[in-house]
Length: 81
Image 1: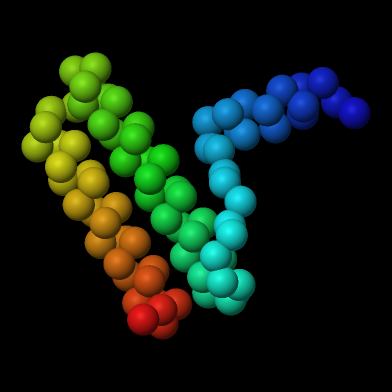
Image 2: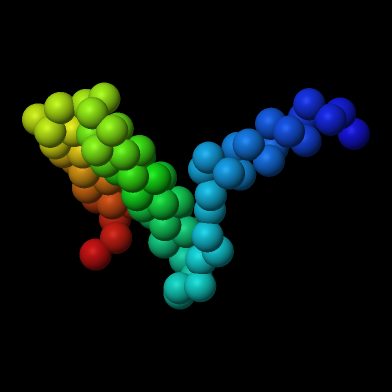
């Protein structure tokens, strides 16, 4: 196997970790869980950038608010109660 491919795969796993889903199995729940994990990861990055002084609190809030709206829209689109 290509060592560069292994490195990129490991880097991707490190930067975007995924946890297994143990809830009730429905395809829409699985998709929502993936969206929720992505939301959490992005919020974590934004918080770290704000803590490190790379983003203002206002900009961090705006970005998190946009992500929250996207998550709400995804939940509504999946028709999860």
